[in-house]
Length: 74
Image 1 (cartoon, rainbow, N blue to C red):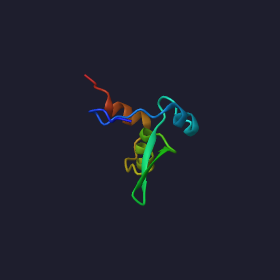
Image 2: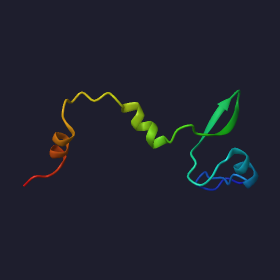
Image 3: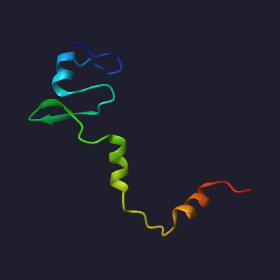
Image 4: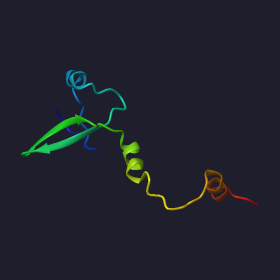
């Protein structure tokens, strides 16, 4: 297997099938004792970013008030 100039490799079809990796599947590389393993992510990365922030807002505004603040009024 060769690594491209962008650092990409092709995961062989049989490996993708065994791991259940399909297009748009998020994967992670995990290191254990100097070896790296490919594993499917348990959670979508974009969702994970927002889950970290869930429940930390301090503003006591209603949705309508927030929407008014984010829209231009002229």
